[in-house]
Image (tube, rainbow, N blue to C red; front, side, top):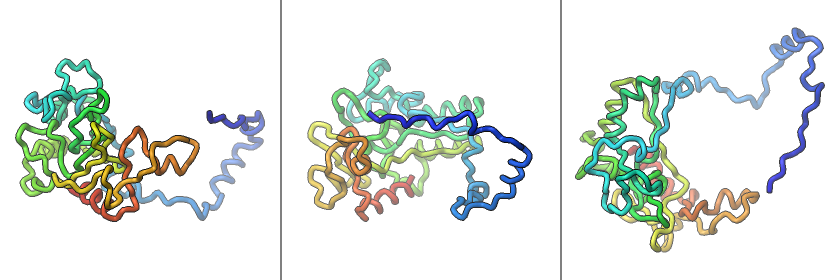
Length: 260
């Protein structure tokens, strides 16, 4: 167990004999050579410190299109909304339907859980309804878009006619921003013997269990949370952890972010 260090508080540490003299000295003190120049934060086109950001779990927010809820594996869907480990049916159309509601609350930016295609299987009794078990960073989760709609981010770049594109357009109509959640640390856990199978717009490019191109770390799970090396390199909750030193992986994840 980590022990907190003893308090350094003393009754004298906040005493000031001459407040005016103290303030004057602080104002005249030269700036540190290592002081960070934060001017760029005030000159950017997007200044998120002035936004009111609403974070929502897409699957749990609102079901706007009931036709997509079962997905390719209906065992992962609970229409009663009682099984916390399964999908409940929320989707991007549901977010669109509630934009006026969010706008009227004063929300200026919407932060969504990851939208990418997830592993369609259960880990014990849990599905990837949270969006953090991505198997293809180049495709949208079909459960979040219209049934039969092309989930490929590559193939829909020019047409811009997907539910995702309509969401962006509707946000901009209301002068609202979109924050995309992209987890670059890991892909998928072991579900029925399949772990870390990664796809590039439907084409398999990596596999934790047959990692010939070294896309993943293979150090096991974190055993000692006080060991900084383990925390940085080992697995969390059995998730296949990417090897960030792999140039092919870095190129893949950068291109995925650009597509998004």
